[in-house]
Image (cartoon, rainbow, N blue to C red; front, side, top):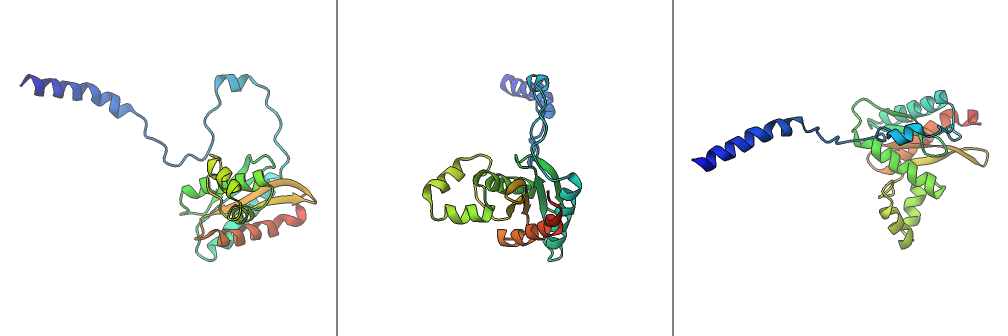
Length: 185
């Protein structure tokens, strides 16, 4: 009887602590809050990127292209340092598409080529494949991200995720680029 009473008491004492434990975020898509030390540092200007209005237009054009073929996608447009300018998800797009879009953008930025080209190159280069797998910002190369260029200068990245197969994501990303390319400076 004492054992049962002790077990019940332990459960009652533990219940408030268990009830207050925050649920794990199943799909984090943004960085954690800045630390107090980070808040004291100077705040540098953003890296070169396209204007927000163009980023929104490109993301909407990419998502509309995918939605026209029933694919619910997320499009991320980032500056030349990979910092998101805009992330827009179609209604019903899976939350994980935001994270996958970011990994595609990171691959394109790091290797200075489309994420599809990174995947193709990794298929024939074991050292590159290992480096991709070891990089926590990428882990798996997937098609769907392209560098945004003003002449020869990289000014950003567009990345699409959510269509079955990266080849379809690439078509949508290209539609987003086509909508704004003539105005990228």
